[in-house]
Every structure is written in C-alpha cells, then in structure tokens.
Length: 125
Image 1 (cartoon, one colour):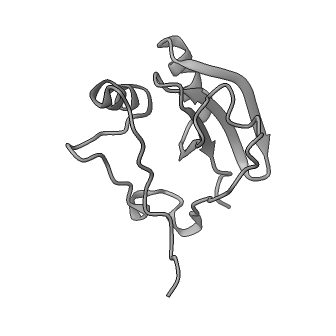
Image 2 (cartoon, one colour):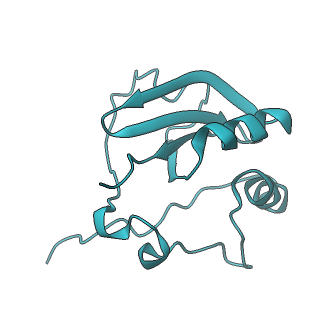
C-alpha cells in the first residue's frame, strides 16, 4: 500500500463564508456546502499534470508575510492578467513574480492572511 496522490487541503477560518466568497471572486473557485473539487481530467495540461508536496524548514521565509504553517499552490492560466485583476480589485498581491523553466509564479494573500502561490505551468510543446 502507498499514497497515490494529493487528495485535498483543509484549513480553518473564523468566517468560512467570507473566505469562500473571496476565493470565488478572485480565483474563480466555485464552491458547494462542503467545498470544491478539482478534476485533473478538466485541466488542459492533465496529461503532464502533477501535484507538488514539499516540507520546508520551520524557519523558511517562503510563506511570509503569512504566519500560517502552510501555503497553498493553485495552477492557473493567464497569471499576469490574473494578478493585475486581483491587484485592481484590492487583493494583497506580492510584488515578487518569478519566471523559470518550471513555469511562472506569483503570490497573493487571502483575507485570513494565508499565502497562496499561483503557478502557471510552461506551455505544452
């Protein structure tokens, strides 16, 4: 027996409804009473898709300015446009933007102070 993939992320909020609404407004994540589900089959890069799982040292600065002990990562399309829209809508968007062989990365904070990494994978060949 072994782990075959990443099943989900669950976390607490003092106001789950407000936080669900923020995620829907800024990231387009629709939700049901229980949350949401992402199906790999719906992803345009499903054939090359992957889910990252990593443990960082407890003194990492990678999650700052969040005080949370976790960081979420979402795959996105049109990252630069998404970050610009979020900035215009008043979301807390990090000035840092990274382009690499693994794709492009941007970071935002949700209203509860959780850091979110947004990842646009490299275009498929």
